[in-house]
Length: 331
Ligand SMILES: NC(=O)c1ccc[n+]([C@@H]2O[C@H](COP(=O)([O-])OP(=O)(O)OC[C@H]3O[C@@H](n4cnc5c(N)ncnc54)[C@H](OP(=O)(O)O)[C@@H]3O)[C@@H](O)[C@H]2O)c1
Image (cartoon, rainbow, N blue to C red; front, top):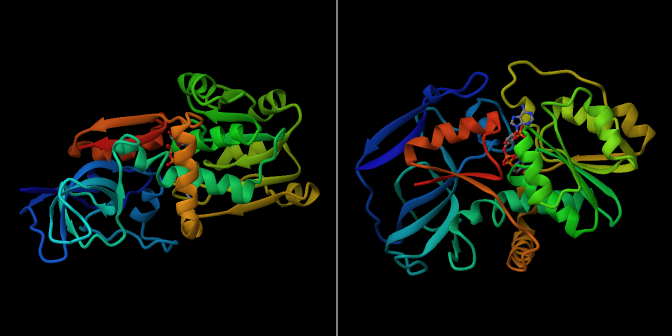
């Protein structure tokens, strides 16, 4: 039998296990032109929260009582498609199922010899590309400048900080525990880091560890943390707006300091982006990330949770900061 996870109801506030439903169905069979895939690793990502709501966005919402989709790594168990053979590993947007068939459209073959298969969901996958293009195309970091990354110990943030170091920046980050702050310095090469949950005055603490101000702010979280960083932004600063996880479970629209005055006075560029804006350049991005990775210039952390049944909880745990680096579920 096959196992499938459906969206049971649309979350209100922080998602709960009741928002998901497990069902069993017959294991599918590949027909002509198709491949049968066995799921090995499942990526859980904060942006999936947006797709669980019934709001119009850049990507359509998940339908109730239909399987949830995210990036997966799977093994080809049977192939009736000449482009794939049994034993190939692939990655792509697939459904939360133990087994599924596909035409192969939109799937990319990955090499488990070059990197762990789960790395293709993180540092060599969508979150790595997000860090790379957001920083390079909008942040335009220059050697000697100060880069601040929020959500710094997460999948995108840990890569953004390391790329900032490769580009010669002084890199500072904010994360939600002392363990993560230590990891930023010891593993990811950050020059300084702050635990935003224990600081009494984040604006002052950022000013103290960034005495020359912030030139590039890679924003993963929004909210109060971003208010404090923007209070320290330099003239001609750049702000790649990657995400705002602090608001994803809000039931009402939050208000905060209005940023326009600072943006004008300091001629700051703030630009939101979606990684798929750069889809045409993905091969270049993957080639660069893979090169740095194989040269040992880029490292990664993963929080690997085991078991198909754990997928919803692993997703929910993103909002409690239970992951260091990329959150992945191993089946
Ligand atoms: N624009 C794009 O195309 C794109 C693509 C991928 C991701 N993103 C965005 O990038 C951000 C990071 O994504 P990711 O996949 O790398 O996830 P992640 O950072 O690996 O995981 C989420 C982290 O967010 C932090 N967090 C959770 N709730 C928070 C809150 N209320 N305030 C501040 N921090 C909070 C937690 O770390 P702490 O322990 O440090 O709080 C948690 O570990 C998200 O906003 C995501 O939506 C955007």
